[in-house]
Image (cartoon, rainbow over all chains, first blue to last red):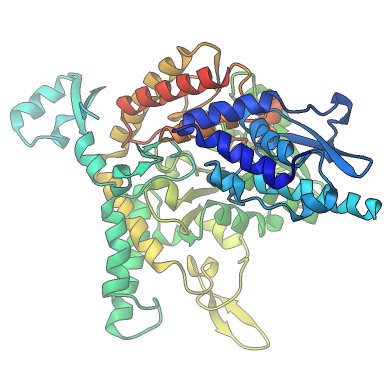
Length: 141
Length: 439
């Protein structure tokens, strides 16, 4: 399995093929459609990430020593954003997720979504995914 | 953008436009004339309208959140700090006198603009929310244990939470006027809610989430029949329609400076003299006192009782400049022009397949709150922002309203007198592009 760093570089490369924001958004929307969907029964209040204008549910399961993330959102763009994160981070070890850098988001031209006040709460999503990793890290040890 | 002149079918007394006797004669015949609002000239007064957003010319349709500021207002702020910055009401020196004269001059402009009897009934606050809290925090003199406070189901959080806090503090009960499917208040239910226990009725003049104008005169008069106090939240009305405090007869009315072309950080609380005298001050400090000793402090009279500390002097003075600006165009002209934008925008949005407008009634401000099919308002808002169009998406700080219509939020386009039909066309194109991308 490729490392987080390698997958993130791959995503940056894919996005670099597009010249304008519209194509990038269209691609992001497509990625959203390939998101490993969270089980309907897991769409509970406590799995909603706060700080988003749209609803985002995330679930994390430990499979041997790696974390599998699933998610969903009621907004398509938000779904695309979480899909990008999950593609890079799902199936990775907790320690690697904790250490993962997030500047690739900037490089794929989604910088504006990194603002902490941005209503889609990408920052909240990153925080939540890392929190899961920290929680599972103690179990792996 | 071309074609800046807009014709308005508008009945005017031509004395206002021309001094010619002949024209005055013809106006007496009651002719309906088309007047022109010089939109090109008006737009030139708003420097921000020249900027680009995401490489596109800015189209600003978030006027219900805050209005843009004309140069006349911006210059006034600069002039204050450049020429006569001093603390007011206390210095004997010339600069302090000058600053005081400008600040009190602004109070007088507010008085006249809203047809308030006395300048001392104009309390300067930091904003509309502050004005509401100033009343709610002292409203225990009007609301006793087991009394009832009535709010409406279309309030924004600023006009719900302070009253909930009051009810908790005094042991009163909060009652809610329900909203009908079309966004209007259920007035039949309102009249049934009123009873001898009703102590306070609190309603917004225009709902920020839907733009619907509430029948506040009827609400106030009915409340007064039960000797209840009334507060009308005028955040959305103050910059968009002619308001007359004496005709309306509310006990309290709150306004926001930044929603009527003034700066942020300045708001207005109007109250009937007797109501303001009964209301205890909510903040202690300088400016609001008469005599201070460690045994007993006596409070100053109106308006100073409610203006503890150094006020937003620059903000107050600049709000005065905003009022001059609005007066120059005329609130009736602004209301008529914005209504034209509302009618046009409503028709255009309805042409988008799957569009649904919430609060689609005739009596409303130039605010269109809508969704397209089952698309999330956040998705649409993100795409149209990329295309340079600033609309608001979300629950508009009025979660109970969204709950009522079982939606996560809406897209809200809110117009001002410096917007144009061409801009609405661009928004509609942007919306159509967003829908194509997202479907």
